Image (tube, rainbow, N blue to C red; front, side, top):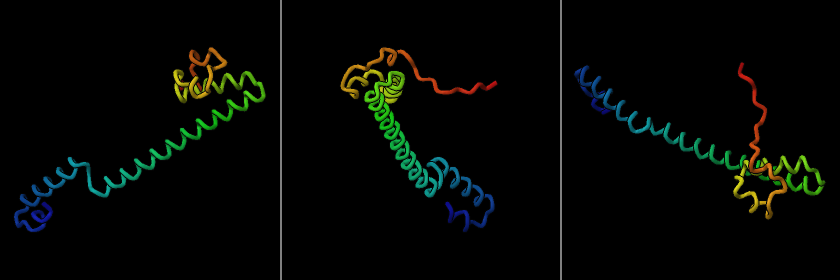
Length: 118
């Protein structure tokens, strides 16, 4: 199509070929350079997300262990709620290797500071 655009003596044929070429490129997902960059960025986003979730889980488990060692009931309750949100209430007993100390873990959702949009 690009060759027809350049070599065509007729301006209408050249314009039609360029339009067909543009339509083909757009229906296949854009230029190849853009597709490669999207794949690279997507892979990088997945890696960053995996690392963030891993760090959050590690921090939550560290806080849970600290709460157990210091016998800090409020920190223990909050740690169990955070872990429950991260891994799901059905798997909390498996991760902690025993049932949670708090019954509010399964019932109390975590609501972080929400700003009023008034």
